Image (cartoon, rainbow, N blue to C red; front, side, top):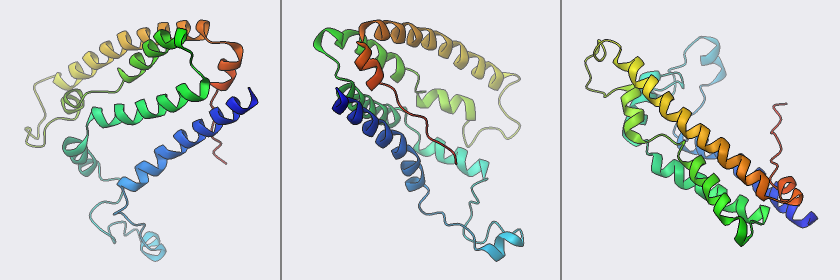
Length: 176
């Protein structure tokens, strides 16, 4: 059982540490400005984006965001966790309900585009209160999905053994 716990911890660390690496790999073209440029307030010294370019980031989401890719990465992490925890055949149904509920929380591309708007949208914005309405619709949808996830988590907890629950624990990453 100790081996399972160690494998679970290693798998959790690998999966949680790969997210920042993946994010930095996507921003690999950006380099940090030289220190003298930073001291002078010149954040644009090495390219168009300074990391605070909201319009550029929104444009990147419009062009490249796909909920499918995020769900694929999350599913891979969940498959590793399933193996590390040691989900048995009689626990598969509750495990699948949990993974399905968790994957359902990843927003679809269309929902993201409703929130941030199209690039060719009228600069004054959509019709009155349309953005607020889109946010409310998304949150209502998330509330339903979150309730399903809570139910799936409770069912999974009751189906797992104490050893599996211990193996499922993922340590918090420290910030210091």
